[in-house]
Structures are given as C-alpha cells and as structure tokens.
Length: 329
Ligand code: SF4
Image (cartoon, rainbow, N blue to C red):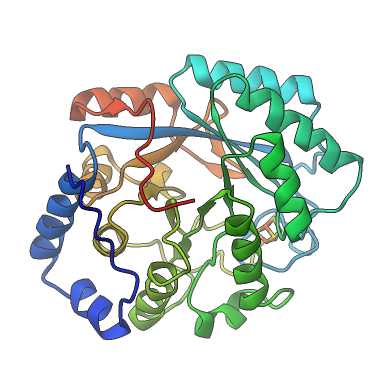
C-alpha cells in the first residue's frame, strides 16, 4: 500500500477530462492500480443508512422523493425515537456494518429539541464502536462543533452536480451554501462525505466539473458517494432515462484516480444493477456500499441484505473493520 500519500489537490479540469475520457478498459485498469496502491482491495466498507426523519422537506431538489412539493406518495415520518435508532444501529453492527449514517429530510439543522435528541443518538451510537455519520441539511459552524463534541465521525452533504448544472436541479439553496456547510464540517474536525448524482440530465462536462470541485476542495472528501439517479415517480426527473452502468464505472474510476485515499461509495442505483455490473464498479475502485435491513435507501429501493452478502462472498470481498483515513479530517 502507498505510504507516501502524495495526494494531488490541484487538478485542472483538462487533467480530469483526459482521465475521464480514456478508453474504458485503460481507465478501469489505471483506477484498479491506484485502488490497490492506497487500499486493501479485498475489503469493502459496509455502511448502514437510516432515515430518522422522512419526507416533508421544504427544499425543491428535483430528484428527491422527500420534497414536500412533489406528489410521491411516501409516508412522512417525524423523528424516530432514540431507542428505535440505537436498536437499529446495534443490529447493523451485528450484521457487519462499521458505519451508521442517520439522515433527516431537513433544509437545515435548527437548534431545537430534535437536534438535542440527534446529539444524544450520535453519542450513544459512537459508544457502540460504530463510525457515526449524519446528513441533516445545512449546518452552521456552532452546530458542526456540537456534533463533533457528541462524537460524530463524518457528515454527508453532497454537491450533487456541477455548479453550472446545479440551478436546473435545485433553486432553494445555492451551490455556495453547500460548500459553506462542507467548510463548517471540515473546520469542526469532522470527516467530510460528499459526492454527487449522475443521470440528472447533465453533460460529461458537468460530471468532470463536479469531480474537479470535489478533487480540489480544501481537503479531499473522506468519502465520495457516487449515485445513479433513482427515478422517483412524482418528481420532475422521474422520466429521465436509466443511467448506463458504464457511465457509473467511468465516474467511479475517475473519482478513484483523482481522490485516491478517499472511500468511493457505490450508492443509490445498486438495486437496478446486476452482480456483474456492481463487480465492474468494485473493479473501478468503489470500496464502500450502503446496506439496509429495510431494502430501502431512504425512500428508494436497495438490494436485499442477504443478496449483498452473497455478492460480497462471491467476489471474495470482506467487510472493512476500520477504514484507512489518510487525507481527512
Ligand atoms: S435531497 Fe434533502 S434537502 Fe433536498 S428535498 Fe430531499 S430531503 Fe430535502
């Protein structure tokens, strides 16, 4: 493994474009080589994502089934109790997860009783020995500091797409709002988890620009989720075409090369992928997945837990016990 950790942070768009546009097999080979240099390629980080507050969100993210303004038929649920969440975290740990991520469909965190309860959840779950992650919307610096004190390991806040395409997808908050939250997270000493979604009607240029933003952030995100659009009925993007698996492979491989020490997470979209297709994503450098006992990733489908273990066994991949953190926080 690479102990030199000479990680590049000054990528140009042209450099990323040249990597992204390589012939696919050359790109995968290069990404697989980088992957083996920085990580144990026989390990996959198994993460559990739980929606602790579902739906009713005021934002207008046009891919999201939880936005109140779209008629998606999901059941809105208020914040789960601490006991429910901690019990699920215990089961996730027993099932092999090393990271537990709690998601709340909020525009931003407010300093109220719900936030106090989440701080208690973070504390109790981190004491179980799990890495705890939250995704709760925008955060102020003082809120990020409180989460860090409670034991939060990572905070997820995706940039979603390129700055140029962003306005077509979300109008209720700006790209800079997102980057400010990431900055607060980093300054608080919490690992940054940030990636994006493909299949939002963006061009290859947008994908390259998004990867450029991530690869030149103040620090490479500790985790980079690469999502394929999960087309939710009732949202403005429901009729867009399914993302081609080779486009996922190309994104994952490029992310792996430009952010070599990061965990690259094959996230939404796995439910529509065969084992063979997911194998290509692992070969291209993905080394993290979400599993779920409910077979849902928030409000979209995720593979059955048993099927995931069957796939990991088939590929000889073992759950990572402790992630190698080399560039963040
Ligand atoms: S992606 Fe998050 S912020 Fe956007 S509508 Fe969905 S829950 Fe709200």
